[in-house]
Image (cartoon, rainbow, N blue to C red; front, side, top):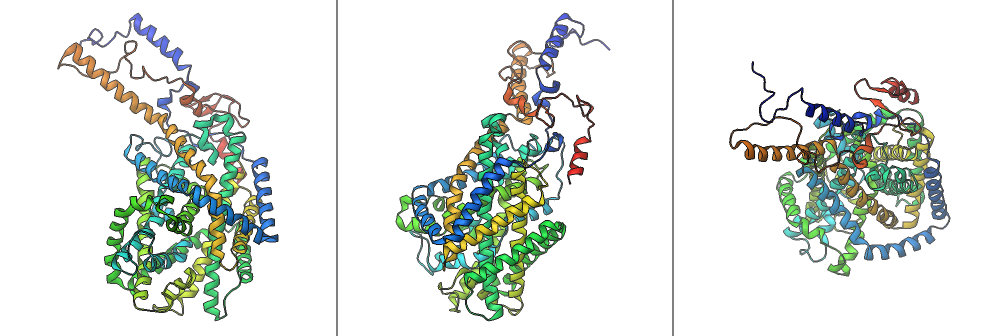
Length: 640
C-alpha cells in the first residue's frame, strides 16, 4: 500500500517539524495539572477527592448563637418580635417585593436557557456516569421533596379564596372567568416558578459536587466568582450561614402550618372547642420527640418507608376526591386551568407596587409569602434533588424538574380547589369564604364518602410530613455545618431540629390569634437577603458551565470544523476531506482559547486531606504519595 506521508496536509512521521511539534506538545502538557488537558477531563466527583469532614466551628457557633438569641427573644417577648417584624415587613414588602419577583423569574429563565443551550448535553456527573434511579423513581422522589403540608393547607382553600375574592385588577368575583383565573393564580404560585428555582440551585449543586468535585455546600457554588481562598474563607462562611438560617425559617414555617392543621383535625375528631396556642405547642412538642427518636435511634430507613407511604396516601387522597367529587367538572377544569395559567403567566409575574396599594396588599398575603417560602426552601430541596439527579444531562434535568412536579401539583390544586368551588356554588357551609384554610380541608372531606375515616388519615399524613421534613432539613443543615459532610453527626442534626421547632413556636407566638401572620412575616424577612445569594448562584453556575470540559470540546470542534472547511476550499476546492494534523500557528482549534488559564484548570488540581497540592495518575488512579484508589471509600466507610 503506498505511503500517505507525502500527501498534502499529512506530515511525515519522521520529519523534524513533527519532532519539534511533539516537543512543544510535551512542554505544553506539563502546564496542565496531572498532564491532563481541561478539555479531556471526564469530570470529578466529590468522592474522588480526599476530604476530611468536620464541624465548621465558626459557621455552627455563630449561626447557633443567632438562632438561640432569636428564639429566646421570641419566647420571652413575642409581642416585641411581632412589632419589629411587622414594621420591617411593611417596609420590605413595599420597597423590596420586586426582588422576590426577580429571583423567581430568574430561576425559571436560567433553566429554560440551559435546556435550549449548548450546555444541555453536559452531565451532572462524569462523562460516562449513568443515572442511579429510573426516570419514574426519580420524578417520584422529586415530587416527594417539593410536596409538603402546603398541598393540604392551601390546596382546597387558595383557589376558593381567589374565586370569592379575585386578585385586584383581574376578573369579577364568582363568575366562570373567576374560576379559571383562580386556578391560574394557584398554578402560578405552585407551578413552574417554584420548580425553576429549585432546579437552578439543585442543578448547580449537582454539577459542583459530582462534576467539579467540590464539597456539597452552597458556598462551593461561588468558587468561579470568589476563587478558592474566599470561598473557603469569610465570604463562604457567611453564605453557608445564610443558607442554614433560610432553611431553618422556611422549614419552621412548614412545621407551623402542619401543627395548625393537625390541631384542626384534632378539634374535629375530638369534638372539642377551638384549639389554643398552648395545644399547638403540645402538638409541636410531641412531634419533635418523634423527630428526635428517628434521628438518634437509627430508624432512618423506617422513616423513608413511612415517607413513601405518605406520598402514596397523598396521591391516593387526590384520586379519591377526583373520583368521588365533581369528576366531569374537574376533567374540563384541568386543561382550562392550565391554558389560562400559561396565557396569564406574564401578566401575573408583572404584578407589583406599580399596580397600586391593593395589589401590594395582595402580594403581601399571597405571592410574596410564597416566593419567600420557596426561596427559603431552596437549600433543602436543592440539595436533595442534586443527590438524586446525578448522571442526568442538564437538558433532561431542566425539563423534567421544572415540568413534571408542576403538572402533578396542578392536578392536585385543580382537584382540591375545583371541588371546593363547586361546594361553594352549592351553598354548603364552610365554603363561603369565612372559614380558615385548615377548616376548608376537613370541611371538603366531610362532604365526601368515608368522612368518619378521612380525618384520621389526614392527621397521619400531616404528622409524617412534619417528622420527615424536620428530619431531612436537619440533615441538610448538618451537612452545611460540617463542611459538606453527607452523613453529619446525630448531635448536630438534633440540635438544628430543635432550633427549627423553637422557631416554629416563635412564629406561632408572634402571630398570636392569627398564627399564619407570624409565619408569613418572618419567612419573607429571612428570604430577602438569601435572594441575593440565589442571584449569585445563577451567575456562578453559568460561569462554571462556560469552562466545562464538554463546552471546551464543543468550542474546539466548531472552530476546527470551520477552519478545516475554509482551508480545504482554499487549497483543494471541492476535493478535500478532514484529517487531524498539527495546525499552522494561529489556525488551531484552540488558537483563541487559553487552555492553561487557571480558571479552566484550577478546579481539577488534586489536593490531599490538608489542602496541599499533590500529583495524581489518571491511568492507575493512584496518588503521588502512594494512596490506593479505594482509600477514600475506606475512609467513608469508617466514618459511617
